[in-house]
Structure formats: C-alpha cells, structure tokens
Image 1 (cartoon, one colour):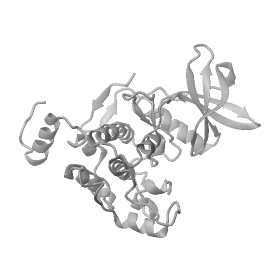
Image 2 (cartoon, rainbow, N blue to C red):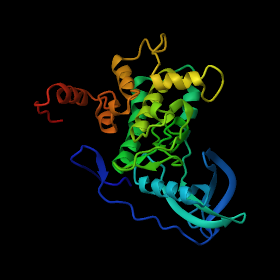
Image 3 (cartoon, rainbow, N blue to C red):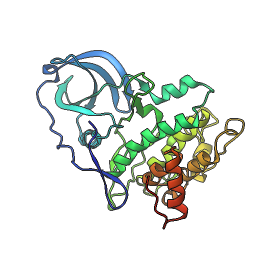
Image 4 (tube, helix red, strand yellow):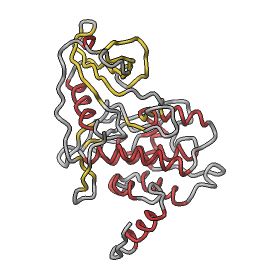
Length: 318
C-alpha cells in the first residue's frame, strides 16, 4: 500500500514514515525463490530474470549486481524510494556468491506491462492525445516528486526505465533502474556525468555541477516525445550523440514543427518550454509541475492555478 504522505511547509510531499532500514539477507536466495533463466529485461547494470517465491508461487523480478560500494548505493536509494506507488518496489535483497563473485540479488515486483518506450513505438506515427500524455506525465511526476522530497535525483528518467504493472489500460506506470541515482542535499551537488543522450540536460554535458533539476529536463523531453512521436534533440549522423546534438541541447535549440504540433495546445507547449530551460535555476520544479493545470486537467484545478498564479490573495476552496 502507498504510504501516507504529509505536506511540509515548502509544499513538497514527504512520507510520514520512513521505510525500515534495508536488511540484506545472507542465506541463499534459492532457499526462498525458484530462479529461472527467463530474461524479463536489461538494465544499465545487467539483466533481470523471472523468479518465483517458493511459499506462494508468486512471480517476481530478480536483478543481479556485482557487490561494490556503487551497487550498494543504488540498492539503498531504490529501497528508500520503494514506498512510492509509482516506483518499482524492492521486496528483498540478498548477498550471495554467484560464479565465485559476491553479488547483490535484488528481488523486485514483476512489471508485466512492458516499457513506456514499447508503447510509444507501438503507436508509430500516432502520437498520444494530450489527455493520455497528461495522465502518463502525472504518473512519472508522482515518482519524481517522491524522490525529490527525500533528496534523491534519479538522473536517468527515460521511457525505457518506466514500466507498466500489467497490460491493462489502467495499469500503474512505475520508475525503475537507480543505477545513476544520487543523493542530493544543499552541500552535495551532483557532478558525475551520467546520462542517456536523448534525455540529457545541458548542464550534465558541461563541467558545472547539477542537481534534481536534471530530472525535470528529462520530463520535458518525454512529454515532447509523447505529443509528437520523436525527440526534441537527436543526432543527424546515426550516432548516439553528435557534436551538433550536444550543441543543440546546450543552446536549447528545438522546435514545434507542423503538422505534428499544429493541434497541440499552447498550454502544453509552454509547459515543455518551462521544463526545457537550459538554465537549471529557471527550470520548473517538480512541485510546480504537479500543480500545473495541464497535469491536473480538471476544471477546478485550472481555475485554482489561475487564481494562485495571478491573484495570490484570492481564496478558492476545491
């Protein structure tokens, strides 16, 4: 069940109860689970296998990482984030020897609905409607809001790392793969350049430090793709990232070309512009994003946003 949340004075949602600290089990995972060779997916740090709990027969996903300080940080941050309904939940973690090497074996809930990336590909030239895109972006925003509230930057938010709980239309969309995640505090800016080219924020390409706002840039890129079917920045040479693409990202050079964008609302375009600001301090925060009327599509929230933005003294009960 999703943890209760409490709104703090800064307007961010914080979990009332922290998850109990991670207890890594030392017994063999095969005592508790039947491990199969069925590959469910590939993460940045290795493949994910299908496993079954022996007591219940329930299906789970198993990720294996070679034990090291970096792997332990990844697991610790993912564990802390697991109470969020829009983040793939870690069930158990084992420290076992595998092929003579000490490994961390991470048991996670099984996401049978596949990647958001696959659903985008399946659409082909048929972009998502604004309502569909809004619902998807709100789900991703819930995950980022939770992470930022507990001072974690994911740093690799992309459609391949967003998984559906099932193939049903109302399936939950959840964020996974914390291989690039980092804890962020006012004294701990992020300086290690980790990125996937299409979704990388400009500041990550340079020597300057960056923080949670790099996740907001990635939200802008994903929203752009959902509404037209292709990314705002891409390489013309078939490379993962080219000098020209790097320059366009750092300069924030992208367009809303017709016909794909002719029927997209100005409100949606303006939200993308606010997310794809090259200066991180000018970029929208996750709290502002979640309060935006395009994300909260009800009439009440649009009216509320208008009054909160333009008439701060006006009180509206919704």
